[in-house]
Image 1 (cartoon, rainbow, N blue to C red):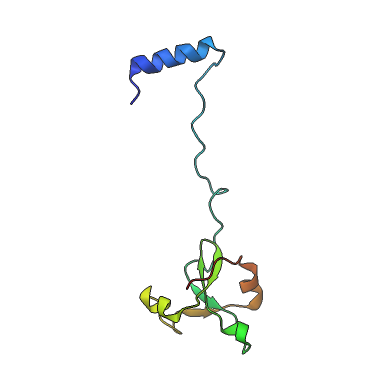
Image 2 (tube, rainbow, N blue to C red):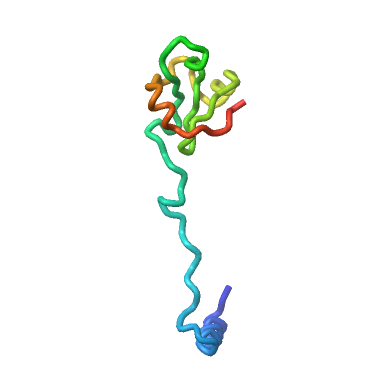
Length: 103
């Protein structure tokens, strides 16, 4: 912890070397530095259709879709299949960046 006397001495030293004020604090995390979010955040999603790719279920987390490879993961994490799976358009699914699969 910085005492008042130490802070004053540090400020005097900064003035002596040409700094008019102490350096600014490190930047705070802002909306621009946070991961993007999706309207489907924390939801299970899939696209409609009967092709093999259409059957993939994804969890949207931190703005990315993650393919849930292991169905046991769903129950272990409180999701119900197929009740909790939301069907979204292929375009909506394609617009979500892809993350690592969940195994």
